[in-house]
Length: 388
Image 1 (cartoon, rainbow, N blue to C red):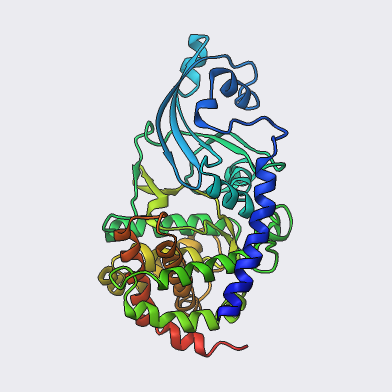
Image 2: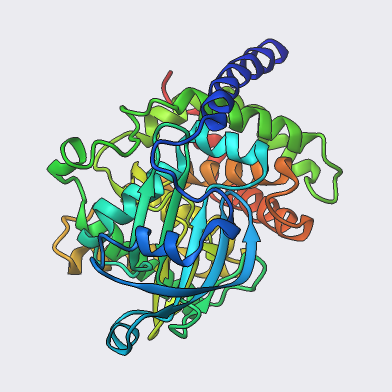
């Protein structure tokens, strides 16, 4: 185990160094690098493709936040009343993160480039609610990016939270959203054509780095105290780590579709009774159950999942069928669910290991829920029977 961790650390260090060198360069597109750089003139230039001739006279920088992106709401003033009536008075803006280490990580994993491409090329083709993009630009030379998005707060949307107690009604709305999202490109020819830019199980340039990040993240989580990562979660680690390659092969079995990839409740919003999703940095091609299981095992309280997960999965299949998808059998997706519970567990452990991604209370709940799901579903026994 130690030699693998040393190898992973060396591979990550090399990839991070290459990303750090790239990040330090001046970008070719001259995108804003800090929230303070978003002036009226800059916003006018960013919006030029969506609204040629638009004149912005003022930008009011509002509330700001930082994580894997720098984020802020802005108010906008326009030169004429007609534009002011036709165009939003507020936007939500996302930029590459200002924190140097996070900026390097985001560039290394191409998270900003992937999300901008989602909004530019894929969002218009999906039957799922996601923020409208007025500008989505990535600079491949240095990893800078900018998104000017619909302000969901101004639109009156309700937001999910990783800390809230998910109800059955909320879970049903999210499951319906997954069904609509996945149906559009279920086993679609464009997965190997126009959408081949997305990572897939057989075409993923950064899979080795992702696997290294997850192994090192799990190792960090195992060093945390028992009140965050309890003994029952620690007992899962050797099996998951040993069988990870077999898991990747099982997860790659067709049919595949477009999935969100980070489908916890904190990345959902609700408008007119329907669930939508934001933060599309890890959009990818995968089995649809990746999103469904991740949500059920990480965001739904254990008692609620135990009582309703079979009904919710049947609901998901019904939504697929209503969209014209030749949905697989319940037994087939239930077997996928047992294996994707391991994906939810890995994500929860990496989050706990990172420390800064979520408060300890959220990390503790995610690890506990995902570990309980692994045991409830017999996932360890299923893992042990995987070939290879």
